[in-house]
Length: 257
Image 1 (cartoon, rainbow, N blue to C red):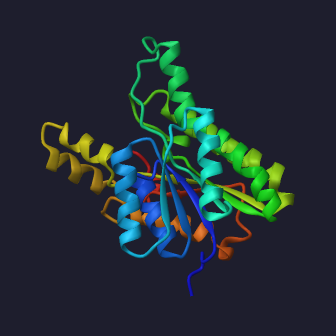
Image 2 (cartoon, rainbow, N blue to C red):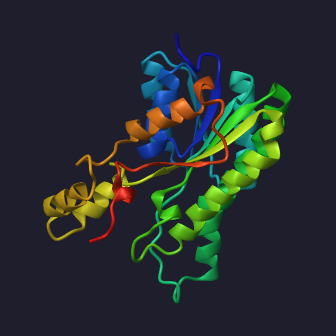
């Protein structure tokens, strides 16, 4: 029996990487999935792969930094699948600014994508979830919410803010049977991580260095995160809300030496 049968999910940034891994797992568990993605090519590719495997999926071209686009995505999801039970706020990007050189425009753009979009998506699905009698919102944060690296400004601040948004929404809407959880991945084998390795003087050595930091001696996959999210949004996790769940292969358990 599929644990998410009959459920409808919106996953932002589902064209590749973690978002695609989440969309695939939710579909495999029985959910119909709205692939809310700005990149047309990757969004359509994810839709095609899911449909080819017999799953229900619809790509909805969306720039989550634009409120009107978000409203449209929610409306189109409901028109297509009838409702929204699950929202996964995954869209975002890593940041590497110098705080003394970052412009106000660059700051506003970073906030709009990495933090404000999660609030806006939640704003437009919450009334529908209340009408349904419940729902689940998952915010994809990062281990950067509690620890970070050099030259990642202001990524840590925005991911910390996303965990704060999670707590606020969980408290304010829990009595409506709406759960809100933050999932914080560490190193996951996604295009930005792979590109980071490739930019090193010795890509193979850099990858091995990072792998060695992990107690389980591997880097995570988008499917790993998808498996966790699929559990969090299921009825089996009905007593979990208002918290941050870290998925990092034990990386954050390690004391720097």
